[in-house]
Figure 1 (cartoon, rainbow, N blue to C red):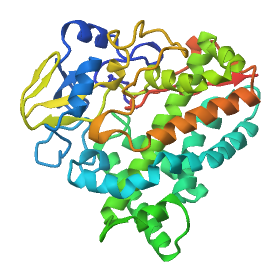
Figure 2: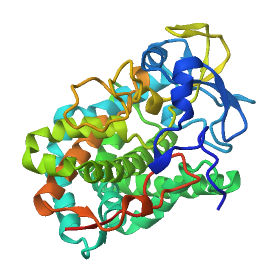
Figure 3: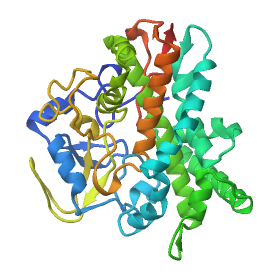
Length: 390
């Protein structure tokens, strides 16, 4: 497997944002960089610039035209995250009702049941929190909500890894995984049309706005987006977050003051975002940012991880502090492409922490933190394993 060249810069220790981000924030906040695909894009690293950029109407995610820039070669230009209004608005309107806060809150008992089952089944001590808990929980939850058979967990996890690779897989492997995933999803959708149930996938099939419904290709891409976004990111944020809680001594703080859990979730999201950048965009007109101008036709990539460590927005940003005063982090984006599953991800992390604190009040690392290996060659960074004892 190729070594990790960075995306687009070499990561810092323990998968932290690249050291170059700090230099860029000070001296070159809109400078370009070379992406894994070989294309170039301006990388936006200051909090105020990222927030302004994502709110701008003069950006396009419609990158299906010949010669359009890519983060990685062979990626799907028609994914849900890669389309603009009015197509994007239409799909979010059809799907958004399934992710309203009251709907997501109704899923909490099922999320808690999955978390409790996984915690009860952890081997050891020692146990691997990544494979035994962090990876399984969001995948089990999204499968449960979508109505995907649990027997297919392993296949979906493998496809998800390919979709999120930067150098670990070739463009040909990516395309093959996309074809296999699409074929599986079409078969699943056909089965659910024939025998509908009460899962999220059934709600998506039945979603309508007047006479408007989701086309089959839209359904296939939506299922892919929900599984990938609802699995890899949450799993890595969770494992990274628990690691920071343990190494900083703040796991004990949470145990003694469980009312801090919601704030801890926000600090984990801010501090432990497992990817450097956001979605690639191209400007359709000049965009004025606090730090300067992005000219029409330029490729631009906002770095949410860099924005989350901007000292102008978060004092002493390199300190992990679960009691930090609240301020919106950029981990779920901003504007039209704000993450549809943000409420579910927050719920999964919150429920996971509550479950771990209850079942393992003396949780601790089973190996020195410096001995923990980190993933490479993927757009998402996290520990390969997280051995813990209690």
